[in-house]
Image 1 (tube, rainbow, N blue to C red):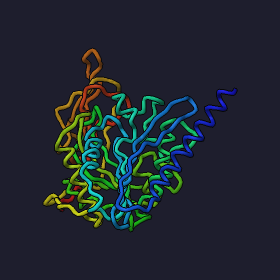
Image 2 (spheres, rainbow, N blue to C red; image 1 turned 120 degrees about the vertical axis):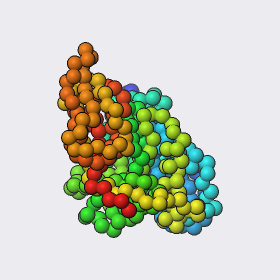
Image 3 (tube, one colour; image 1 turned 30 degrees about the vertical axis):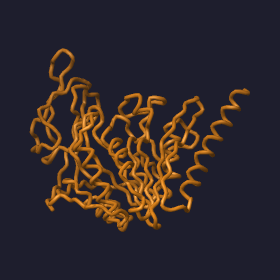
Image 4 (tube, rainbow, N blue to C red; image 1 turned 180 degrees about the horizontal axis):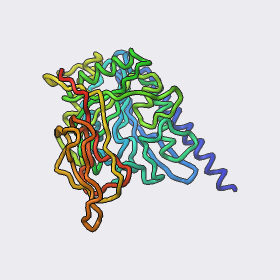
Length: 348
């Protein structure tokens, strides 16, 4: 009983300390400035995690721009891009504040674990808004929601293809018609990113409904929010890293927060609809298609076999369009999304 009380007091103390430390650093009026530190979390099972937080303040006040990477620890290009940006940013050129969460799920990163935090087997990007008294992952989500997002004007969540995901780079936002001003700005920043593909997702959540996804939670909280997707198959591609950095610099330039040479694609394709091809079986996937390929409705895009080589099903494209992402490795499980096809494509 005594041990349980001591553990509870430690958990409460850690939460208050994390909360107050972020408040203190965020509210510091010294400009320009750069502060880097860890926020530590403990849950009632004795799990402990520490996530790095960086607060960069420019000489003059202005918007608060948050960029987060590493929600999935196996998505490496966003984490490497954040590290490089941290070394490149010059606060003397910055207006406003940049909050950086360069590795939101360090246990997954160092544990080389796709999708979930190995300490509680929970996917951080299915957990928002989080739970203050929950598991270690739920507590991290709660901190991001109630401390980071709450103080943010623009929230950028950076992802890439996880260990098994082949992916076409794109910038994306939610088409939230209830908040037209914020949605219009998210769209503007996505289009200014320099990415060749801009994807808009439908937004059907009711207020106070759990968002699950990080930048969707920011939309729920009436923030300007969007995401970048770059990199694939759990590897570091230098082009993917450079693309992310270009996107961040372009957005900051668009907001008049940072002076940098703006680079943009000469044109981009806007994608307004998505369809998802799911597997009815667990088995071995074979497919000659890759992310970025065009497909025609009804076209055979792969097959799933059992371990003995018997074909369980032939996969056909549900729509004509372009493959945004797909499973790029042989294992596939029942009900998994094998492929996402973007359509409603408009060249701009």
